Image (cartoon, rainbow, N blue to C red; front, side):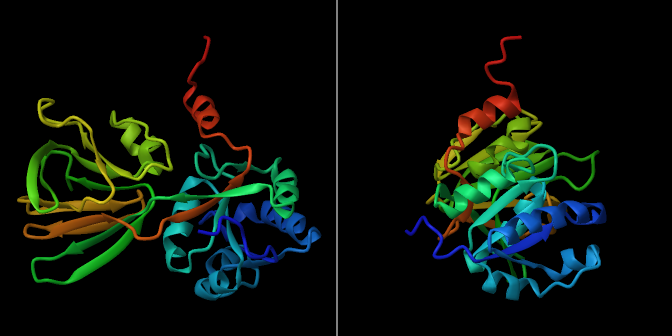
Amino acid sequence: MNNKLEQIKTAGFILKPEAPEIKPLYEKIKGKFEARGITVLIGSLSANMIDEEGMDFEEMCEKSDFLVSLGGDGTLLSLVRRSYFFHKPVVGINAGTLGFLADITIEDTDNFLDQLLKEEYRIDNRMMIEGCIITKSGTKKPFFALNDVVLTRPVVSKMAKIFASLDGELFNTYRGDGLIISTPTGSTAYNLAAGGPVIYPLTKAFIMTAISAHSLTNQRPLVVPADFTIELSSSDEKIIAVIDGQDNYEMNEGDILKIQGARIGAKLLHRKERNYFSVLREKLSWGDKN
């Protein structure tokens, strides 16, 4: 697999949604790209938000050498999913708060661009989830996820009951608030908050973590190889599947959620010197002497 960009001439931008106040920052960042001879395109939804001319998202992806998310991790997650079939590298410039994925700071943009043009960067291939909800009537609703898929109860007062199978064999029934199926990239998101393990992001594996499990005896977090097929269903009248914390699907009794590792992963563009464990130390205060 080629881990370098074929050329660095055109960048396609997506901005944090519902944040028109980001316009001055976008114009500043755009100027930095153009000063280095990189043409900037912007998707129509982002452009309309800041009263500028944009282009159709698919056309932007097609014409761009790489894609840029200007926002937080949520903006980057959305961009990765929407652009999946174009397989373009994505870089996140962090105008949000946490920044596990969108790790280029505003202050570091100049340095990043200079390194980019010197080919001092790397492209990480991150595992993605390829999923499909198969309804009782046989219709299919396909989707992709970079972080996780969460099955959760529709109302606070009711416990979820989820049946989980691996490669066609039932292995557990989860009872509680729900179940998280996470990629290694998503292991530092909801999975971590629910007590799941942190997995090195270039690993190929699923992490299955119960949310507020009713019983701890059979609902410990489980890590399984990415070549397994996971099928989830419920006897509940209704259950909600949440994709990367952003897209919601209603599942009814008899519906099946099928999850596999996607054939092609997400390409995330990073500074060459970026160290994952340094990010963990910074974001999670690991090794804090206080």
